[in-house]
Length: 122
Image 1 (cartoon, rainbow, N blue to C red):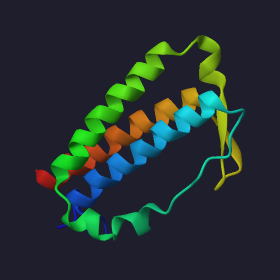
Image 2 (image 1 turned 90 degrees about the horizontal axis):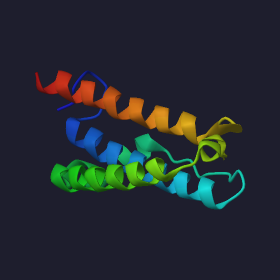
Image 3 (image 1 turned 135 degrees about the horizontal axis):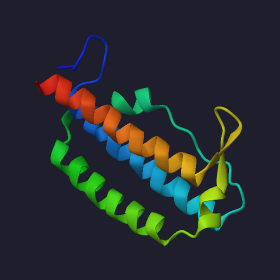
């Protein structure tokens, strides 16, 4: 059941967070290993209606999120001040996104969807 009218189910939301943060991890590594790479965007709504989002156990994505966040934190902790200024290009906006902006965006993303989940369970 969706947490609000017209939204994804909590199951879809958890799988979305795992996939989104997996993209974050890849974007981080591309940005550290390439010069201002053009990243790949994806259609999150198309992902959300695939079979795995509606049937796969939430525990798998929760485990994936936990490991991703450990890996992201490890890499973020190792960055030098100048690394935070490195950027990728997002194809939907054709704009540069620095690693500092990316880290803040994904931190917000987690908290934003956690609030949705708490609201849907309450």
